[in-house]
Length: 253
Image (cartoon, rainbow, N blue to C red; front, side, top):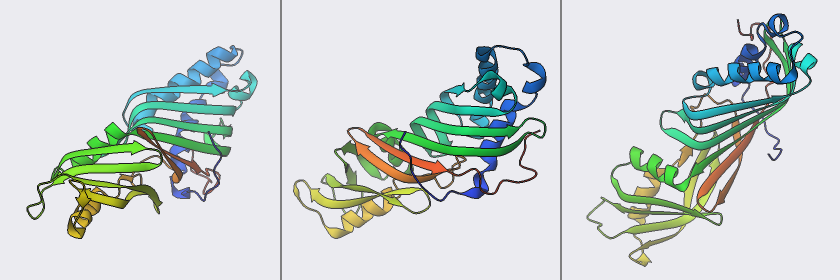
């Protein structure tokens, strides 16, 4: 996963503090002397069980942790990777794939408080089919809606119910990263049945589909810093700084 520098949202630091707290609670007492695979498996299964509550419902979650056994028991992980399929990040947004990678995790096993995380990155993927379904559910007045993603461009086709316009409307443009974890569609080529589209129709569609993606209300505590449009999919990446805003009372009982 690419490294991205970003100012994070410190008020969300308790999110992954909770994940790490439930990982290590009681491990030093119950797992001393066990093999690496057993210790790692216990941590992974404990985190997996709680992820629907902490991140959101999903078709599936898989967690992989790595590090020396003695270090794990004492509250240290080299790396933890969370992979989710069909993850609902908020009520109207279900991503096809979510990957969260944490490196250099240190945790106090007695107080269950997060000490530090060197780096946390995430990557979320939304297919054009899922994006079409997302917009169509929010905006049923946009009939026959279809979103196509290809070569850094997005095309939105629909038959809007506006001022008697009956011909199909096609808008092609780029996806632009906006502040506060939002992605908007900016059209640069518009046509109705192959002819230039009237301005009111363009405004009507643009106002209803934007923002095309919004993570501002998600439980997931990260800021989008980069997006990529490839054939059939939108990928957003970001990074959270969990070392900010940490202090007493951040642990998990």
